[in-house]
Length: 416
Image 1 (spheres, helix red, strand yellow):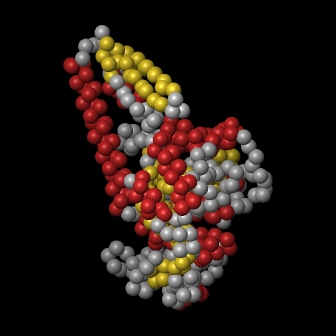
Image 2: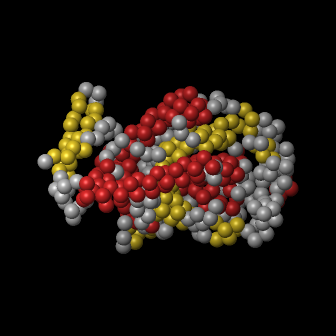
Image 3: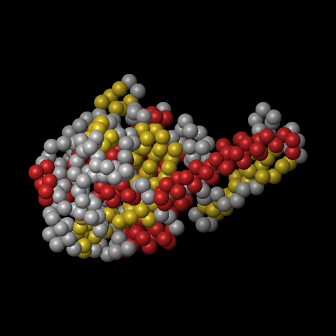
């Protein structure tokens, strides 16, 4: 299966349209690529695919292969030339290595490829008027028929809300991924979701529904990104909170999920996406506490060069690099792996001890109770026949991993 080439899968979700999911997905993909990872982007926003426009490859077309579709290359793995990097707190514009020496040997980046319905439509202005079953089939085809190269990360840009695309996406992913690399290192790891919101209350109220959706379906929330959090004037450097302030922080605290950070509106990034022009900032511009003086390298302002190479000069690049290198995010992933290792070890011990403690032939009844529509309670009984050839703990483990999070109680009842 094509997903077998993928190590980690990340979802970008939001309950509200227009909050900048595709923008966050694009910048996260560029950030991971600049960190040296191989990255793929899958756009399942079928009625409004915008990833091709963000990467500036709208005219590209996917190629058919005997086993499926070949995704479009944004750029290959290579070494970028050293450059004057913006963002130094002391006003310095020279990029530095960890040891303090000047980066003279360039920057190694990973390859980036993407897949979107926008590459398949005959015209970019064509309207996609599909009912649910056709959307479901298209999403499943994207997940099973795209021939991805070996990837460190696959980012999935989703439509707003909790629609047919989301249900089809999760059904397919839960069947073909593992909740932890410790359980099966050869199966893609569904790492979790990044939830995007804007600061205003009307957006936060809708995005809360998306967090509840993640909770009910068992999808980990890696963190909340507050997009469009203020506009920094390029002339006076004053930040104006055009969409209120702090809504993302409050929501993350309420749901007890990490808050990754706030992303301001940067006109230079908009110009980079719209026309491919390299970001340049007037002297005295300060964004998020970082000095963005680039007038001395204004001669570089052009449309030449790779999109990722020009993005390095954007004020948002160091922000995203900080968001997705934070100790909080790393600690969360480390905790997930540690808990999974402990769980795996526990089940191994149970398997070894089972035949000693229990009779050779035992029937277990797994009683599952869950609430449906707040009015009807359904009882489901699953009988598992234990034999020495198929130890019960292993069978029960495989079953429990697939049970949705809405299930409330479990009862293991040995019978004669």
